[in-house]
Image (cartoon, rainbow, N blue to C red; front, side):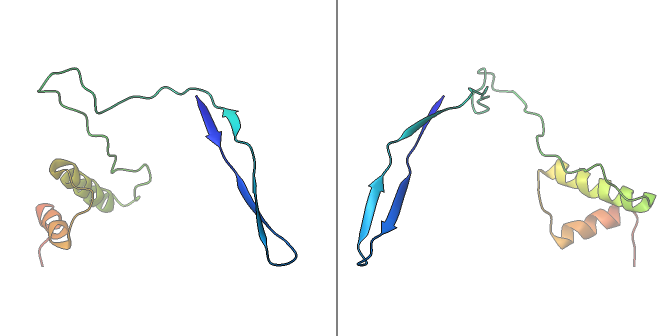
Length: 101
């Protein structure tokens, strides 16, 4: 794939005049990369796409109760297709784990 880059530089002259110098477009050769068009599908209506978002990270707490809470929040987000949750939803997750005041 070829990409054309154009560069313009401005040089100020002695008497506050600005001269514009156009440099000829240079052609830079870039390797072609494989592009996967995700918007296209094979025509099946009931095609279910896998969840692409990853909420869990590899660095969980050493405390098991903290890891359990983090996993419960992640499961809640995945089940409801939510990236961010409200404090009320967070409280609901805590209650589902057995929290009471």
